[in-house]
Image (cartoon, helix red, strand yellow):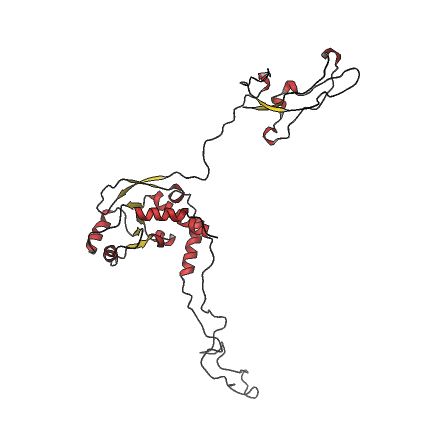
Length: 311
């Protein structure tokens, strides 16, 4: 609560009885912070009216400003001229998201403590348009693009003129391998090319954050201490998956290279897939209704999301 007012306004005045009233426009500060109308605050100081010895003059030779409050001890400024309105500023830090705390378990459903997930990676707002763009970019990039058709110079056949230009009564042609003939060429057909298009790294990174945040918000994100399995038997992995609720399709994400036992135990299960953290992508997350990540995978993903983008 503060108000910028003039401390020294007029100098060299004699007796106020010698002055007569004149009207001077009210003083308004040009600073944007104090650009309010002073009619409701300085009603008694809206104008200064003075006259001395038959000549009008403004005795303000020099103006200086300071901030005065009711608690100020610098001079006896009338307190009723100060604003009593309170400015309420909400306490929040824009750009930061609240971290998540999630329990950590293992394949035997044993409690292994808790883990804090970074809010700017696992708790960002959901945007379907970003996910759609990233998925289209992934599918277009992985498309082979090996489609090909033959032009008139590539199709098999002779180039001899089939019949004379005139005299047969038939339409004139120079070759039987044109696009209008059976076994002829294809005009403007597809040729091998890349279907990939450019998508900014910021958008791709944001798409992965949104996919992770969606699984965390749905409760379909699970954190394991590690993905170590005692044996490579597939039946053991089937038992582990059956213990997880609503796990129709499961995606296991480990930090480094995939354990050989885990790879052998899941290779015959079409509803369980394994990926390293470097290969985690939006499309794979959307294809599976359950996402299981190890502690190491979480740390690597967060580190990758916090790494500055090279330009």
